[in-house]
Image (cartoon, rainbow, N blue to C red):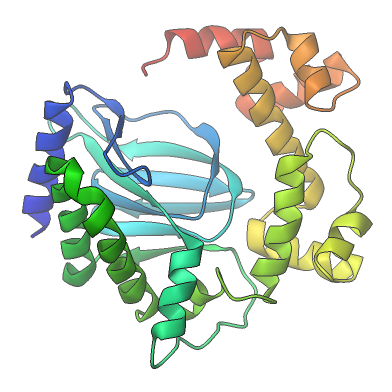
Length: 297
């Protein structure tokens, strides 16, 4: 089954023109990545999703925590998180091949409600990411998703049913309790996610921990503890990464200059912005833009 899945993905990518990069599919939530070489860390905001490695290996850095996973494994991300990912194993003869599937949390919640035996909630706080093996049952669902790319007309009818099956197998598996925390109201993930949503929408404004804690219905100390346990960073570090990622996007896609980008994301000092940008991305803003322009797609 695994070799068939790899062959189907390769056939789809080649039909889209081949090469390497990010390949869209007729399903908005499903994307394919192929790379013929190892890649330096790339920072972005990860959405709640399932990230499957078919070939090669990948490493993700969330805050201070590093997660490695390889072929026949998948990474589950439970909430929106700024992170740094790199392709750790790839070559011209055996390229890295991965699939990302964004979660529909409303559909997942509906699947839980219909389960006769619901997964027991995992009450232990911890990072909202984990790695698990892709067994044959889950792999067959992913294979059916990829085969749907041959029939875009069937996607609106069949894609939801395959996704419901994927959710069921994830929820009924060894990490079902962690998966359930994604969508259950009142859990620490749910409360922290509300604060993260505010940070995402209003990252340019200075937000005090007390404001975020009140939104999450927690005391400031409890909120700070759970936020760091789930994201591996403090709220201030989280907001800083969101600001710098948005500044990079503004400079790269909207041709905004360094000073204006710094101001738009909430910095009052261009020099402070440049220092923190260099610390996060390894190079000053202007040099970073030059590297992006010459980097592979």
